[in-house]
Image (cartoon, rainbow over all chains, first blue to last red; front, side, top):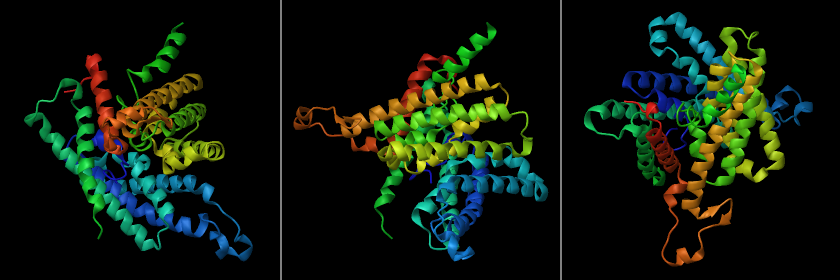
Length: 190
Length: 208
């Protein structure tokens, strides 16, 4: 998600100062993706796409609700985030306090909505594909943010960056370099 | 008098001192994705200004009636509604631009600038300052988009807004378009350069 589509950048750059918080956020994003993608997929297939409502009765076969998809997806994501927050708070207070503010912030992580929109664009064949895509995208995001956090932690000791570039500026350049490196994967066909 | 000065600050700070992209680090994803050419950058910038200004006003009007634990959902729904309207307007009047922007118009909903400003400003301030804040931040964001889009299109395709700018004689002499500029990582490096320039002038923005 990060190095190919460049989604989820804001929290990626803002949160990657140390590895522990980066990893925690990555886990949270993965979890949200795995949960919201199948729900949005079912919504998309049975309610939103053209002709989707035909299971209610043949007179509904002309109804095309896809203009509502943005609002529905966002509503699902926001409610899921709220639900997950309440569940985590009840069943695992330690995890809740270590994630802190990041849990509600995931609702606006572009990667989550981006995942649902890509799923809509690409017409996934089944719920299981949606779950796997969520897991894969989430894990990719997790790896990317943990890698950058690991590099940033070491930067202060090993390098002498010009003052105006310190902190955010160098993170941008690092992400750009890693992105260029990842482009080498574009030509691989499995 | 104090109100007037404050309004000026609210409107002009986000242009440089408190710029949403290079200082607050918000809205990065779209800067990378839409700035390959100048025209989508401008369209995106204008859309965000519109959505941000009106969302700020609406949330500011509602701020005393939203219960705390569902405020994120309310904010998201308001923004989503506005984005759907903008999306339909773009599809009607600027179809080519909207095709190029594809999912990123939808992603304005999750554009961190919106949530960030709604949380930080609109929830605590009156409608008129919120409107100014929305416009100011939108313009700050649009300025960065236009700068990055300008360089990426000029150096990456030799055109600006579709018009060939680099004369053919340069190409004949051996100049080649910088293909890397069309790819998103270059946008990151361009933003880093903007940050470098800005922080060299404003020493108080530098971090350690």
